[in-house]
Image (cartoon, rainbow, N blue to C red; front, side, top):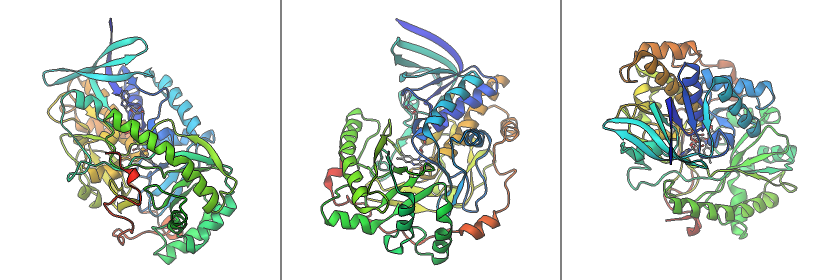
Length: 492
Ligand SMILES: Cc1cc2nc3c(=O)[nH]c(=O)nc-3n(C[C@H](O)[C@H](O)[C@H](O)COP(=O)(O)OP(=O)(O)OC[C@H]3O[C@@H](n4cnc5c(N)ncnc54)[C@H](O)[C@@H]3O)c2cc1C
């Protein structure tokens, strides 16, 4: 038997993007349903710190609902202060449990109807209109009909099953960024770790090491940092590899020393060749990655300063897929739009995080710095159909551009914009394409969002204290487009 349920706005996927889309739609008066496959809200945002609220001029670019979420977490000590960073703009370390609880509370307060442990398995399409989805859960099959659907699955599942155009991976070979299952270590000796970071021989922060002025500033600030971003320590990994202690397709220590005094989040497992839309490929990725974890824990204990007494505390509940299907929309955002800091007429939110590509066929990352950019409403509207929007990882953007727009705050900003646009279009009795753009933009601004109208001047005080990387940096080193030392990394 199929149960039928009717809603105005349907959001599929409750990650950073979907949660904000659902909250914004409900707060703007639409009857809203949020469907989530997992048994918790937050998706990947509930597993790691949030990067990129600020741009390279240390200006707050992501405001509105995402900022409200952070402030509310900070008020109950569920998040650190913002820590400024020359590569990432800023980071805020999140208590992931507090975030999951707050996310449920916020949905209840806004009146969002939440369906957990419910998987969308098909899309309902009538002519050019997407009119809902089919869900499978413990109750059986449920038909959810909606006036507007927002695909925030990260995988573009609703779009793909509704016959909407999508792309996946880089143009040449379709390979997506390497995925990572993150895990946490407890029992870290913070002072010893910091001493290791300060030792130039360890090359703890690869991006800033070539700039002595920035390095000096970092050394001065690091003791007082609430969260310490790490991407480096390559000499330690080389030593471990030479000793036969490490055989993973990763050549840098990547992670974050969180705001908990003894905790470190490890972002180092990886496989190459994953197809995130193929169940067999996903299963193989999990089994490879679980086997990497003990090796990496042992590496930390044996080689990284401050980790001799550390142990495994928690493995994240879901694989971190950095890139999957990107739904093609009325506009496709490009890397040039971000590097040039483009201001679109139909801007609905902003971003300024660098293009951060975890190499699909090599190790480490490719990175390019960007200027504060806007995201146009057209990139949230699926092409050639009515009634389908998207936000988050499946935004209409190229492989390169999504490597910047994918971070948590920027996904949240897109979600707020999509949810608000959907609710306002319904209130006007028109499609999102036909809705008044100025009403959408004015409402978003009134609800705190930033699209360039209230942007501050560069934060000269922080630029002086933290320093600034050049817009065009030297090429980063590392293996490029080849498997690292182990072919075991490949799952295709
Ligand atoms: C390993 C890793 C490290 C990262 N590090 C950082 C970092 O330190 N800071 C930062 O800001 N960003 C980081 N990012 C980027 C960022 O976390 C993600 O890109 C962002 O959270 C994606 O949000 P989203 O809402 O688009 O997707 P997701 O968080 O993937 O959410 C999608 C949701 O949809 C659900 N879903 C999927 N399919 C279905 C379906 N068919 N039916 C029902 N539900 C479905 C999923 O269960 C999931 O909850 C990292 C990403 C990865 C993978």
